[in-house]
Length: 470
Image (cartoon, rainbow, N blue to C red; front, side, top):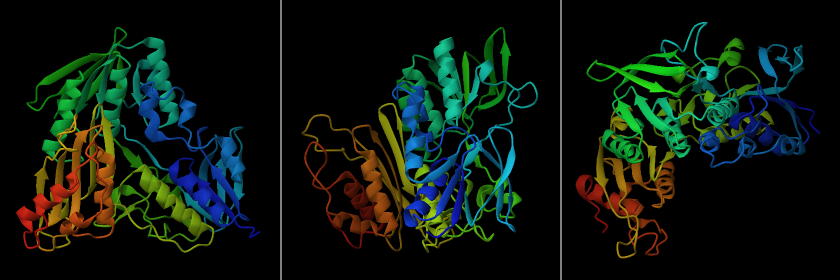
């Protein structure tokens, strides 16, 4: 028994991962998790599938139940807010569900407070008369938000909805509400939906949305939301500067998140990229005995250096490193590549590493170029073959793989294939070497040269022909 007391503030991916890792590494240490709401270790990424009805009950989104966490040896304080941190005496002030303030002593503390929804400067969303869930205007980042939205749909049976934002959550929610029989208008201020991929690839996602009845307005800025006569009106401006108005029974605002850093700042931690908590690869903040991990902290990117990428996969990994080190280990976070995937109706979009303009602006001396291929996902003679749009980005001087983007049908194993690219990136593989990978093959699922290898060959022929391998 070490007698060490580790506290993790935050009950989502990073906080729980840190707590479990500390307890696993040192079963003798005491581990306390401070959770502001009543939903520790719930899948925020699963919210759209609960709202759609595909996940029958919100409780099914729990990675682990509270009972499971207690069985793992964690002391979980739900409904408890961390309000202050004294790093000199190593004491955390908490506000309990009963309204009492008390202090917890700690030896090591991990901040995993995550991120909070961004409220855009739209008239009707801010101020004392701001519209909220009772008016039919929702944001979506927590289980509480999800339950409020699902309850509103059940109780009021809305027929129309406007979604403000067309990033990952906005796109998933367009599908979720459509599955609930609600007609969706999606409004995005940027020129394309899914701005994390190149414009022409985003256009494929746009086309999928419209094919399923979603009205998509890009380059359109929402100025105001008002409620008149029991209905909501969304006022916007289109790319030509002309006014656009949409009536709706329901409005969902999902335009992104920002890191929640108040507790860390109060403890003297420095902020870095995008206002996130500055940490090193050991997840140390620079304040003694204080770590940070997850969406509240910066991300060490294997190609870009320090950036901010709020991803669940990254939060789990960072949390584990922080928890292990808080328990006495010496572990480093290996870094992220920003690997992401999203399902939009029958289409899947994925990316890993850098797009061409990102690589050009990275300051690493690369001379990036991209090649786009559209190989079939499996042998054309087996029924159901569909094309995958694959864009490979590499350094034309060294042949180094820098990134990949993929768009394809739900059955085309897009997630598997982007993961192969991500693995190659992780190990610094040249694009030519992708052809040497021993990948599985059967006609219903692939080809002797997998589509990702076909795309690698196309890039090499165009940009790095010195080592042909076809």
